[in-house]
Image (cartoon, rainbow over all chains, first blue to last red; front, side, top):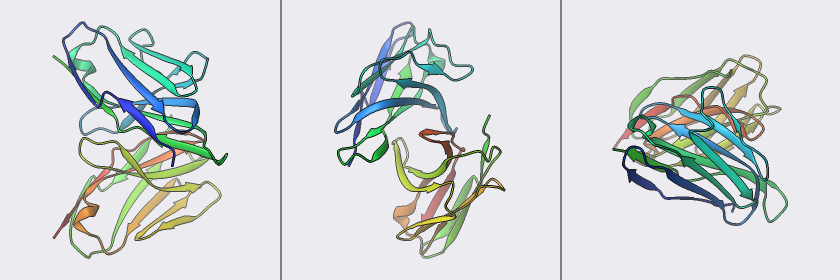
Length: 118
Length: 110
C-alpha cells in the first residue's frame, strides 16, 4: 500500500536554531501534502496545505515565515521550523495524497516527528 | 471553521464489552469522515473512511456511522480487547483535508 516516510522521527534542538522535517511518499506521487501539528493532549491542527510546485497555503494563525514549507517534487515535502523556540515543541505529522500504482486515489499519514526545543 | 467534539474524552472498560464513541461536528458540508487510531507518541492509523453519501462502514469489529445532516458520527467497537487501547480520533474532511477532534482515550482492562 501507499507509504509515507517522515524523518526524523524525533529531534531535539537548541532555541534559535532551525529544524527541517522531511515527508516522502515512497510508492506514489503526492500531488498534495498536508502538515499538521499536535500539542500534548490536544487534537491535530492543520497548519498548511502544499501542492507540488506551488506555494503552500497556510491556515489562519500559522506564521508562514516561521514554518517554511517546500514541495519541490512529487515525492518530497519539507517543513522547516525557523528560529525554533520552546513553544514550537510539538508533534508534527504530514499526510500525502495522490494516485497510487493502481491509479486509485490514496491518502496516507506519516508516523510523525516529535520536536523538542530546549 | 469546522469544530469537532468527541465524547467521552476518556473511557475505561473491561475486556469483551461493546462500546460506542461519539463525534459531532459543526459544518455538515463535508465530503467524507475518517476515524483514526493513535497510539501514544505515534502517528495515525486510519480505521474507517465514510464518504458523505454513505451511512456506515464496517471493518472487522469496527462499525462507523455517519449522519451528515445532523453533524454526527459514531464508532462502534464490538467485543473490545486490550489491544484496542489507544486514542481514537474523528476527522470530518473536505476531500483530502481533515479537521480533527481531541479524541477519546480508550483503555480496555484485561
